[in-house]
Picture 1: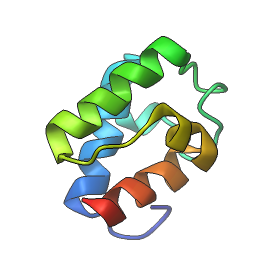
Picture 2: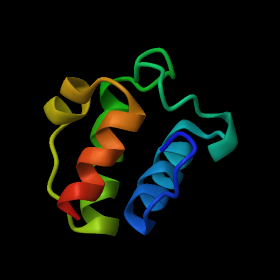
Picture 3: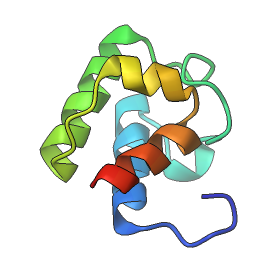
Length: 81
């Protein structure tokens, strides 16, 4: 995502994260950890549900935290979209 063209799925996943965190997309450091960004377990559940609803990708909160950063998780989601 850094410096490369984002796919539609990546853009959507990033926009959904911004929505959950109540920030602008440009304010998200995609290399920071989710907890560092303020994503707690309740928001993580909401975010994963939004991913499923918008992109049709059934992910888990565990997968989100296993990937550690928005950059890694969003690439994972886009690969499965």
